[in-house]
Length: 216
Image (cartoon, rainbow, N blue to C red; front, side, top):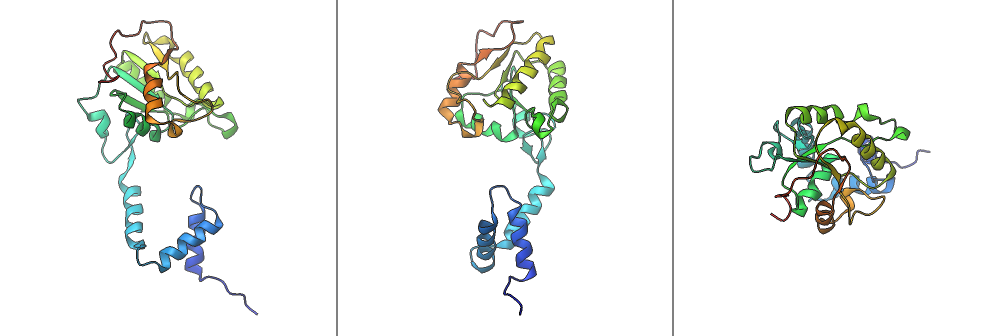
């Protein structure tokens, strides 16, 4: 005797949904049934949106943020203060800093952090692209806006050693950043205070007198 089971297309949809981060078997089943039964689901629109984002959105060759054009709108904006470069782990870390309104400079997303347990070394990150930017258009200050976990700390120390050859002040976010947390969990006010209270990592050059991006 055969047992009742969903049709193959529905089972396939559930399996694809289970591959999404944070979606378990029960959640995937509920979403699939909602898409099948609800008049508000609009699966065709969802499919077109997924296809379009895959075809048109990529990472900016300069900063690593998501964009449809190269360079992205942030890198091409003449109103950004190009003297300050903020280095973050992931492209998504740029958004909370932007929402804080405390920084109006440029960004560089590494694309991750050094994590030997996950087989991620410096060569897997966008460090070569960072060095190229510093040689071609050096800022007056580099701000490391990385997280507070062990891997982020290791990445910060690696970059501090690597960037000693550049006569550019290297600072990092300071007060207000919770230990063991990433930028995506940090509120805008905390980020603003962390930017204003950043600490020096490199002793080779003095910090600029004016920080026009803070509170401007």
